[in-house]
Length: 128
Image (tube, helix red, strand yellow):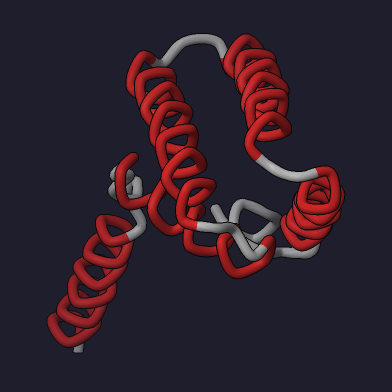
């Protein structure tokens, strides 16, 4: 009986250890992230080919910066401040690419994304 209980405990421990390993950091490919963001913005904002190219370049630039910052580690509060500054810079550059109407849609899109995150969406509660 004791052997069966110990065996059962060992099986559970091994199962939990395996599940914990699968919860590790996600692979973050800046180019893939930039491509997905650009595709979504193309659909949301009806970007033309020239705008798509410029938005992709902009998204790649900032995805690479984010990746460097993540890999550098450091103080979480400082990273949060840097992310905020980067987003502001990215939005200023985005404003130069988009028409006035597209930029209004872009701001609405960002607001909707932020509200989704607060409701348990990607990066929101329950993700850790």
